[in-house]
Length: 425
Image: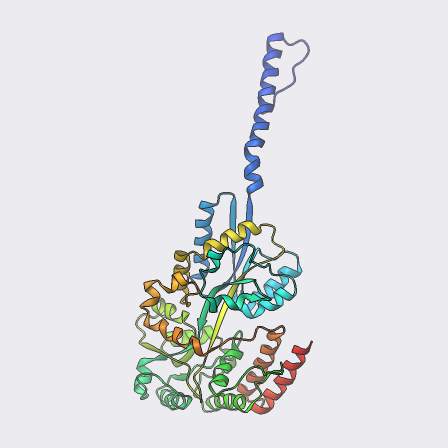
């Protein structure tokens, strides 16, 4: 409100009225500032970066943001969804630019570097004993470094082999393969049917992991007791030779270095692929996108031993956050039972909290139980600084073999030299 100044000749009554209006206007202005001051002080925007798991990921987190904002007036949750293949680079760029998110999903194997670089905020001061007790200990442990919790297990999975029941029945394996010899025998017959036998990933994230399945099944190890890599072993050569043989004989999809995990899963959902090793989230995708597909799930094929790969993704708070209180409140909200059940059902992950594990959906789900039963035999990627460089060396090695540019033993020896050099830095 603007009150105009009056000329000296204005009548006294009008001057008194104007003076009163001016005081009222000033009082209203002061009252307005006072009324809005608490809201301004309390207002906060929490920036959350989440990894893309499926088409359900973005809608889920936006639903969570909207629900949280209703019970926490003055706090805004801003969700950014980033593809896994770009996530690490995006976060590194944001950190370098001084604009990291407040909280983010990360690969747990990245956590050590985040802690060493002083990027991640320890969460122990926020966690009550009751909150900590929500978690199944085996899944909370990977987020602990130096006795402190830096990451909460937002997602967890193991790996198993999905098989097309129609194709495998015709190939003579109605209950799926048990050994790598079974895989080869079935793949040969499936190839003769005009489909692809075994899906072999050769591109982008987890290309190295796809080879670890075979390595571990032959009793091999990634790291030795001396702190150096140990994958260039007899077991490692045997595992990579197995994959090379399948590529050379046309038992996989053609051009394996052009196929990501998602590409293989799409082939499987289309009924064009006999077998693929992947995570439980494919269950939910099949239910939504290919409900008529007849498929089964069995453990990763055995070489000499049975094994699988287990992985957690963590959600972390960044030390540079200016809204840690609100960021923690949102984390607490995400890890309540109903919200976790919905997330795991949407994405097909294994429960990481006790309450979710006790939910009937997971107790009665026989398909998920295949993965749960494999956990005692699971391997995790080493939580060591420089592991991403080791993975890159392995990826380069296996790709060179798939492309026919190198032999398994020589490729693994070169990778081991490069990996050990990276670990020594």
